[in-house]
Length: 125
Image 1 (cartoon, rainbow, N blue to C red):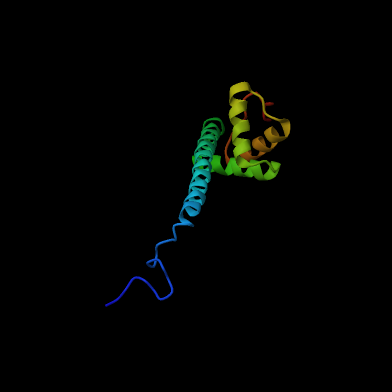
Image 2 (cartoon, rainbow, N blue to C red):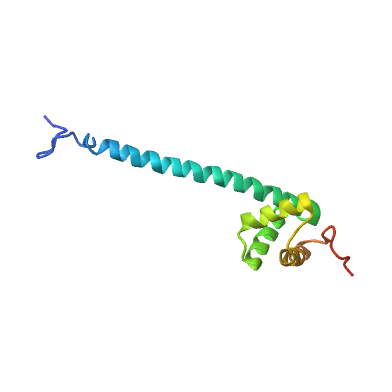
């Protein structure tokens, strides 16, 4: 006959001791809450980036994949997080305001991917 209790153990194998279970459960709850918060932030960030890609598609006449590449390159060349670049582009769409350095990189990058002129920018020769 086999037993679940190993020699020297007071608890069946695989069952945590009662004294550590509440602490482990609390730690797990904290970890899960942090993970949920991170996932919520990721969903919000993803929506922002998707909207900015949509603006690149509409204004730059590029494909969605190219719109993603434009955002990525602007982020890399300006050393600004991609999510922040996306937020700036959305704000630019609402107010017409885009920092000159970001605007210049955006124009150059869009020129690489499609025949474009950013509205409100100087005419291309």
